[in-house]
Length: 149
Image 1 (tube, one colour):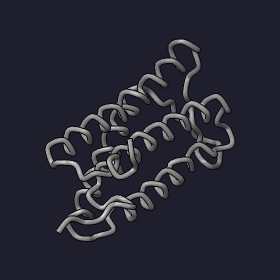
Image 2 (tube, rainbow, N blue to C red):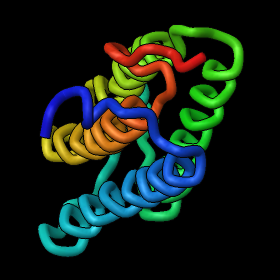
Image 3 (tube, rainbow, N blue to C red):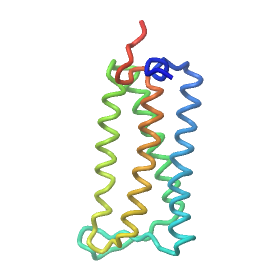
Image 4 (cartoon, rainbow, N blue to C red):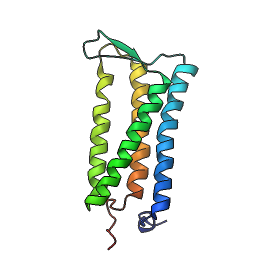
């Protein structure tokens, strides 16, 4: 398969379907990571604030809800950018990578166990990898793709 055929513009229906499946995967995959970590390895995911005085256990419902909300916000931002700029894919990718970087800040609390940091970090990277891959592939203005007139 050539690079050009991989970057061929997608129809709106297949674009929506691909993005919806990406959102589903971005919810299911971190949920599976949570299940393996908590249920199989019997490790509670606990993060602490910057001072190390307050801690919070991360359960499955927040993992599902936050993955879904972040995925839908990312989709919405990309759709909005595609309407108003020719560089939507590039702008969205930069915003997504910056958001990924910021998402690691809560994992830096001094009392957070390394196993929790690894599991939660893996969840963040998994969501980002799925969304970046699919959303950019389906973007009408992906890097290397010309805008159709």
